Image 1 (tube, rainbow, N blue to C red):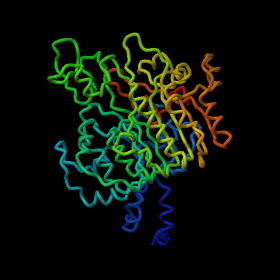
Image 2 (cartoon, one colour):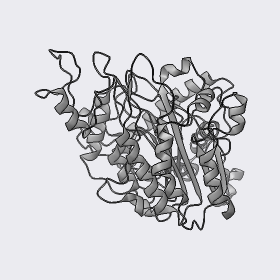
Image 3 (cartoon, rainbow, N blue to C red):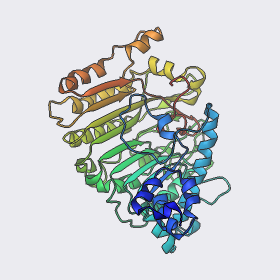
Image 4 (spheres, rainbow, N blue to C red):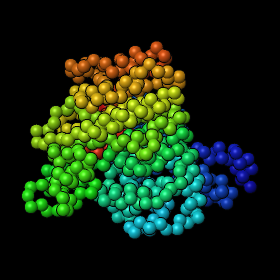
Length: 475
């Protein structure tokens, strides 16, 4: 008998909590006893991204959540390209992992029998953190129902998703339809929910149904992108649009309808055809689900909210950009509602806005230079008018310990360093005046910007920071 076999089960479990997944896989093959001991540990905590991902991407003054990540230090190397290729490899691994648990029969979107083995493993998953593109993977089969697959992990306590936009918008539509076509049991054991990037509204609302048990919530969601009208065909048209060859100048019309009628029908009156490009839009999810989900977060202690914001960056001379006022006011109303609903229990609050610009802006300004020059735009002013009052109201915050504001103000030392004359740090000062007397740690940081491709309207995984990517001149 080996010395390990003579140890109590509790000691062996403690020892096995330190190795990485790869080492645990090797140890699990030793004998049946180790297999039965390690398998639940192996699948209970799934971190499907490169080691050091979160540590590399977090803001320097971010408040630690105290979570113990199931990997060791960052081994990505000293150069950004090393992390790029690692990210691609781990995205493929995440795809392969989810494919095992998918419960649909190919493109027919018909339920198939999930094996008892795969369901038993799915029930062991407690902690799931994935950075991936859930819709396609080059030569591999598509994930027809990625959202239903995630819903099959019924015992999840921690769910963290960072999701990119698919190459073909039809994959997005079919995946959202597949999820909506079937009922899914609620994930009522969830305690931590962090959702970033492109996720369908129905899935977000489903995840938040167990709001009363959630203690840590992060929402950094983007609405579906809309491609530029200056190209022959929009890469990402509005839902319901069908591209035809028009007899007159124009682009993606609906069959049998003229352009104005289609625009009113599909965008609820917003004129996305008025300008050539459509800027990134936040995705509000909590106030239009039939019930007020914002009011149900009765146990929340950590809240992180992130949105794209219209900056002062001058519009390109080549084309103009449509900014959705309706979308921005909706997300600010949601922020205000969540803040008001949770201030009785909140301990840590993070508000993060990302000034956006076309990708070509990277050729003329660095990340820090842009954030120093152009933060006080219309998006900033709308936040001050529609959301800041919820933060400054003279209502008790009995448990609040920290507030972090990113992307709202330029720290004075940064303005001086870049020899720029900018407005004073007035928003941060207002929040400090309100909360510092209460012993709350208030800090205001420069934040990150959000870049999007004008042809597709898509914010790339390394262009926005929603997944936490750090710009070259930010570190």
